[in-house]
Length: 454
Image (cartoon, rainbow, N blue to C red):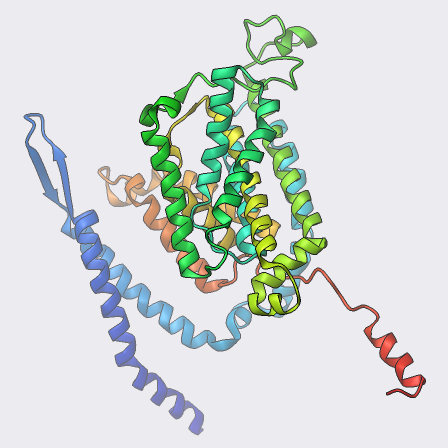
């Protein structure tokens, strides 16, 4: 009978701290939302600046933050150190683990059938291509962040190197995509090695700052080197990808795929080909990553991630380990960049800002560092989810016709990320499976005992 009184006393003593945390969060929200939402400015028809206020919406958001902070703190106290085990029954957890074992094959089968299912829906095909592009970028960054444990905030620089490599070589020299694709990967890997040398002695926050600066340097070079990159205007007229140099997707070309195969003309052929092309590049990235994890270099990456000092004490060359991680991850980023340039037909520095690096890093962290399946699921949720939030027309019926969902898209997205990180702090698939096992340890110890050495 005394336990409830003790719990009540603890709850009562924690109420002031709970209210203090909620008030601090509400005050921060008030400062941020007052500038972002409360005051709107716009150039009028006479050229003068006009503004209007929306303090009612600010008050609603601050109240939501205050109430949400209280709810989150109460949930954390109720759940306790056992985490989500109290929320999810054992039967549901076993069912989730059973479904998780078949998640990767189901996703692969679904991705193979997407062009068949959504043949006439161009928007879904474009969205699927975009998601697969970010899956490949996430898997490339996973080599650096998830396997080697090196925090890279400038990964978009290698993406830009690959895109501009294909754009410049194709427009100036007329080289085919299939020739420029490996060259873009090689050039991106070269820049990855150049980045790796100055940061060999850095780790943690210092490494993140240097890699962030590297990404901004590449972007500023693309803007200011106008003689080569055409500056902020970008490069247009980038040739399309051909069908391995045998057929093209240009209707006026005599080698047009429909004319050669004697099938009906359709604009969907090129989208379907691009989809399977990026899918093939993703599968190549996954295959190489899985194989490298089983090789000595992959085990060296994981040892470096866990403890660099212990890694050195084992005689592992940390210089080579870091450089190979940067080069491998950059190579996959270069492949994705060349595909991006071929798909868009136009590249400019605006496509390679820091926000892209932040999105790719968020995909890796939310999916689970080192997990290919988790990163793929996170890319589907983040990229597909943000696109789905563009079509929130039903909210206009709740908040009125003046409500614009696009303004709150990133706000809702950020709140979802916070909830996911509170629920699964190590990502959707946060388990790290070892690549080496001591399978015969028990047999060796038993034979050792039989010989009388135990």
